[in-house]
Image 1 (cartoon, one colour):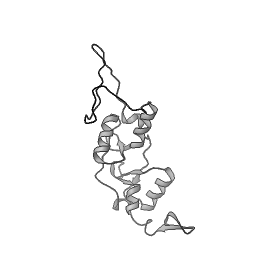
Image 2 (cartoon, rainbow, N blue to C red):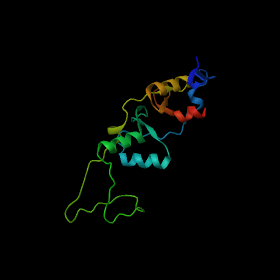
Image 3 (cartoon, rainbow, N blue to C red):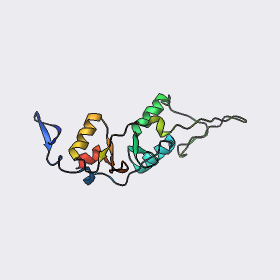
Length: 168
């Protein structure tokens, strides 16, 4: 079986070898994974620092329990009403963080939201020996852009993204 990747002149275009090539040949093995209790602020910093769009969420044993992305972060900010520009007296764009002065005797505190609140709580996974065609079909059918790759014991060993498939 081949995987249909698009249309050319009204007929399906198939990628030769997608049923034989293994996901392990194109997956990324140096994967940034996060735990469900990581704060959204820390997650945003990590994603920006590493220049990536998302990460698998893993349990204590390194098994994927979900996936979190920049889109999840944006959705959380929109749901929280964080859609307007914030103007803080004394703030300058060169500062990395906002500081809010509320006056003597007052302070603001909030429980920081965590990855568990915004992640997709289902991790579609692929085995290391899954064919590339299966990865492409899974991503297309489920509408996801990254799928953790797991070893036989369920531990994460890599990740394959839609960009990896495109490069392949």
